[in-house]
Amino acid sequence: MLSYRHAFHAGNHADVLKHLVMLQLLDYLTQKDKPLYVVDTHAGAGAYDLKSDYARKLAEFQGGIGRLWNLPAEQLPPALADYVSRVRDFNGDGALNHYPGSPWLAWKALRDIDRLRLYELHSTDSRLLASNFQEAGRQVQVHAGDGLAGMKAQLPPPSRRGLVLIDPSYEVKTDYQEIIRALQDALKRFSTGTYAIWYPCLNRPESRQFPDKLKRLPAKDWLHVALHVRAADADGFGMAGSGMFILNPPWTLAAAMKEVLPVLVQHLAEEGDAGKGARFILESGEGGSLGDTPVRPERVRPTVFNPRNSGAVPGKTPQRPGRPAGKPGNPPQTPRNPAATPRPPRKGPGGRSGA
Image 1 (cartoon, rainbow, N blue to C red):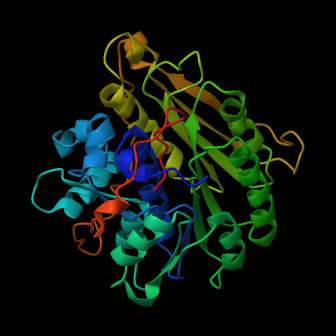
Image 2 (image 1 turned 90 degrees about the vertical axis):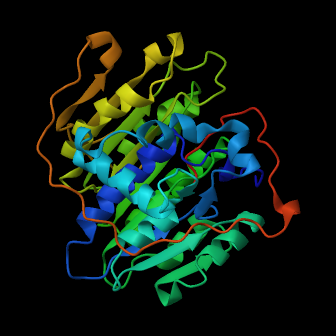
């Protein structure tokens, strides 16, 4: 399906979680001398104007990056402060008017020796993506096509070092199984790569069962992070939160997320009774085999925490500050053709992390 446009959801709580995790992955993976290849399978437009009509239609950024924007950096964990700083660098004038998608954030975090491969199937967004990166040179390649299919051509990368970001809209139930099949193939081609999979937290079987299926994949180990900003809807509609599942994660990521997640729950939980269901999940383990249950025990027991119920936020754990932002960015381009403005999304899962 090609009705999804991330412009309606840019900067929401799901983007906060996804981009924070992605930046932590890139910060670690760019420490070695060898080039890093990054593949974004569902890149979207790459950058978003928060003053546009479609961003203001749902104004989801106000419940995401908007709640973090004015918090003093010294009061935030280093990883979260680094993420907010990079979004600030993208805006430049001090006001929250634009939001960088994962392609832009990834590009600014990469070194000159690294490479970025972007895929977007939606025709309008793929044109905007190409326009936003027309001055990036050979370091960035934009492909108008299916990212899961295109991922095969990129693996394994020449340097045997890579990060793959997978975050479809999940508009159809088959998206979940297609990702499992794509990862089975990817791990055969490039077993040591790092794979970051975003998914929506919905009150639906395919969403609830998805993390357990990912745990069975034959990666060396995995890390599962989920952020719920409210209780799930009984009818299965509406996104109560989102998760990031990382195959072959760096050893530093769990400690960083243990420090950040309680702060995100504290600031991003929805107001009122719905927000009482806000919580996070943090768990890790070792991979399984294709189609079977995990063959090794989990190393860390799952952590589920709701600061509203406990009355306290766990203490911080030491963490190395993130790298300073890389290349300076420019505000994103907006569609030159007013007719390209997307239509409001229909009621459904909604608000995926997307781009």
